[in-house]
Length: 184
Image (cartoon, rainbow, N blue to C red; front, side, top):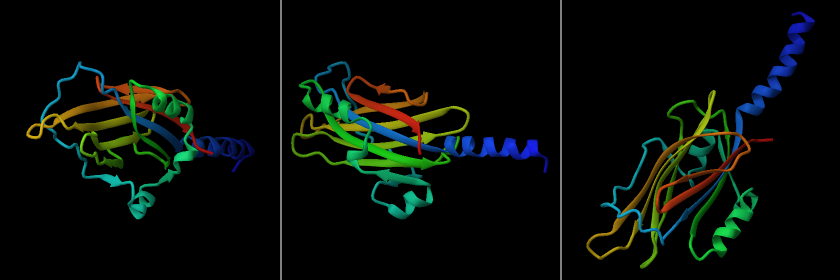
């Protein structure tokens, strides 16, 4: 191997390793005051490849490591949402993912039960790598509505994300703040 080839490998390996290991920070919240969405019968979005957050072997096999809540880089945004009278923060989630698949890779299944007058949240998030990094979300918040007819409020979106940029995915009632960075 020539010196030039060795030098090029020495440069390329750290860059490719950094690009294949990504950190994701996500906040999911509701805008209960929005009247723009009427809701539908709940459908409970699911993906057969979605991994439960408490499935440690499944997460490890998929190359996903969950981070503790206090490690979130979106702590200031969480505090702002928590102090707001307009928004209701539901979930703060951070993870590192090794070599995200460019299509149909693993998704993280989210299930947050609601109480008597609280909304529940179900669905999934999927990070996709490749040439463009994207985040797909299929989330549903079930609002109590009436005893016979709960309302399902849905967010379905796939967004191409730039690294180190805060992105906002939304429907009239469900919002997601997301930031993807190269993991160290």
